[in-house]
Image (cartoon, rainbow, N blue to C red; front, side):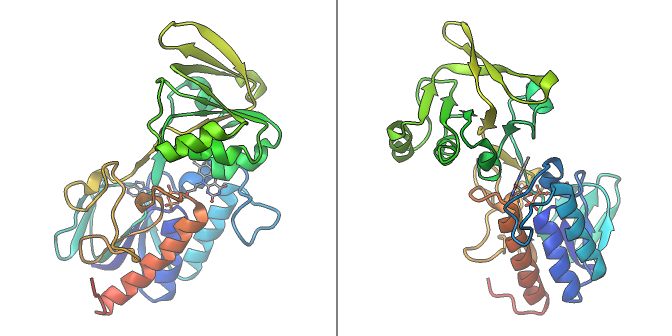
Length: 310
Ligand SMILES: Cc1cc2nc3c(=O)[nH]c(=O)nc-3n(C[C@H](O)[C@H](O)[C@H](O)COP(=O)(O)OP(=O)(O)OC[C@H]3O[C@@H](n4cnc5c(N)ncnc54)[C@H](O)[C@@H]3O)c2cc1C
């Protein structure tokens, strides 16, 4: 039986692995279907401390992994498809049918941005199409961009982008926003923000040039199509945390984000901890994921040493 299993190899999981390995807990890390996590699809990370010149996402994650390996973390490939977390020991079943048991578990399975599902959108991801304004806004100094969505995140992203972009158009499929009245007031007051109501994006051009130049927008009431020139597209229609296999066992919010006890990484079940984007609908950054990964490892170590106070 394992002392601790860590699920996922994004910044949270690999930081937890470094800390658990250095605490002599001999962690087993289940890599997941996307080893390295979300940062593997980004070319430039400029806000991770310690890299003043910036670093590519894959290179950063390779460094995290090497550091975990250096202290003896062990890795197993694949996704977990079922979890029995009310058992003692905790039991997990992998996609290949293999079962593993452990005294403690750190869940750092991350979250995935929801996308529109357009072929042009996936072709231009990282080349002008983004789901993270905090990460990529800086690259759009003096440019015109669009934000797609109508909730608080879309308005927060739009307001943040006005620090860089010359104009931000919020494209929303309805004629009113879901966002809070406060955020709506802030967005309406901002001279750089415009709204395009009752509209959906049907295509993003120009795939052949590998850059964004235009979005083709359809008005859902009139069916009229227009072309809106812009250089960046920020999709802000929500994220989906990877928590399907924990449903019915772990406390989650209505979207599926794991709930942790205030100020800790403890979930509602003993020996089960959560770190990174899987429990964080608010910050969703590599540094905050790594930070909570370290916290989860420390909480795990204390739990295994019998110092658990819930
Ligand atoms: C395009 C893009 C660019 C970004 N740029 C930046 C940036 O510049 N700076 C920044 O700070 N942040 C950036 N982010 C955000 C950052 O990537 C995330 O906040 C961070 O990766 C979250 O780390 P995490 O470890 O919680 O989860 P993730 O990175 O999402 O990793 C989750 C891991 O869990 C695994 N997993 C999922 N389900 C299972 C399962 N059932 N069983 C086992 N394993 C599973 C996955 O395969 C993956 O390995 C960016 C995100 C994107 C998408």
